[in-house]
Image (cartoon, rainbow, N blue to C red; front, side):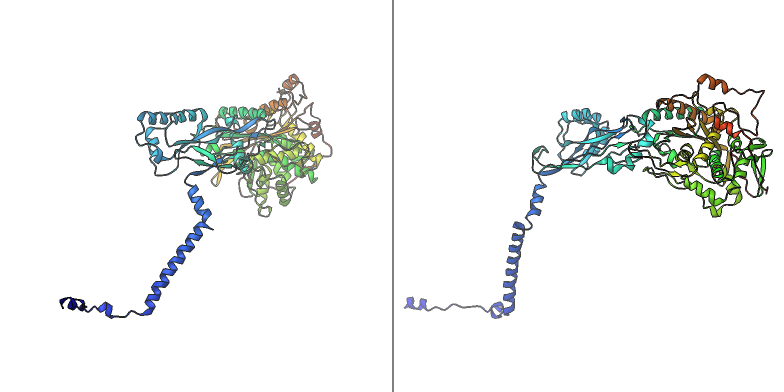
Length: 628
């Protein structure tokens, strides 16, 4: 009985509120739906990783052990017209590091040796190696032999890569022309900057697998070969560049001038054979470089040229038949008033021929000739010879100068422009302008790059050929006895040119203690091969006149350049030296150009065929600067 009663024993249940509540069906379905969507998402993600997204994750994985190494392109060379190297790239090394890979317990001796090799202090080196980066340059452009010693130290985490460093064999002589590059081998100044794309080339690449120590295990992709930069051929002749530089430097130092510049142009092609500035700098060591040294004064500095502009005033008047070479101009006693403003000469020259105005550099004569011209005619002539517009030479920073529109000119301004005040130019513009006189009235595009021999020089005719020849004959008288620049004469060669001595414009007026002494000329006469332009800024010792400061520089450059170009002398040297000595008993007449036995053009200017005398009213307001 007891056994039977145990089988029928009931179980007691307690009341549970959760079990007593029936949940809504939608909650169950929501849970199932969410689980299903999670499963779908995981499936889609797995599909993406294994399918379309595989490339991305593959690259992420490869980045842990693969590296892309840049293969630098060799920068093109810069060569002179004879193939002499003016700029080239030398192989060097960049020392870099992974700071976290450099042992913390690196021995003091190794650290000291590394710092010494890299010319760094130990604190500087420790700072580099403690940076929180995965890559840091320790030292750039390290010589190959030094880099080999660094590698021999065997310091973990210190690596090297190939790169190039620019080297300039001619140093300071060509610095302003060639310029320089930065540590990334990018042009910063000069031709290096102007022709950056041509010189730079295109870098290549190489993809490799590296082990944990940074050693290359194997190549994993086809190597992309670098395309080296193209060479640039300049028109510069290194020998003539040296001639111009040494003579300019000597003049700046002799006259204790602020600066100087000079250039030589081949009249037949328009190619620049030399372009120099002083002071200059060493592009191979720019540790003490200043902004003043960087200025390429030939192209960037503008100034009022002074009397150098008188031959263009005369050229225009001759070309328009307003005067002839034998027209007489009354310059009086050396003082002339135009619209209330006095214009003066160094002395009273009296009556001069047009050629005499150039020989004696008469401001009054230039003014009276200019008054026969309309402002628009002068403005067209100035723009025709390249003034008031930046030279197109493919060189950064070339200045346009200043030339106001002709409609705003007053008569006194037209007068002062005739002898080089009231407008500003660069020496490069002046040199190019004179090629029009040297090249029978045709002005050529002037280039610092080599022009192929089979490419004929093209130019613009701005004066008639006869006009240019007549003015060239006048320019010969300037360097003859009785002219303003006998110091510019060249033994053995007939030359011609014009000096300019201008007060410097400071603030709202002229500083009568500061001068710009210039000379521009051509040789050999009567068919010039070269034009040489020289300008010296603020000479303070000795003379300040263009003929006495820049004239001798012109003479030395021309003589050495013509001999370098194998141009034979056209005058016996002894005869020329003797003729340079004036006979004090027979001074040259002020009203006529000095006679020159070797210059038929000069003789022609001395004739008196049907002279006509220019008359102009006196009357003004502003005092123009005086130029000699």
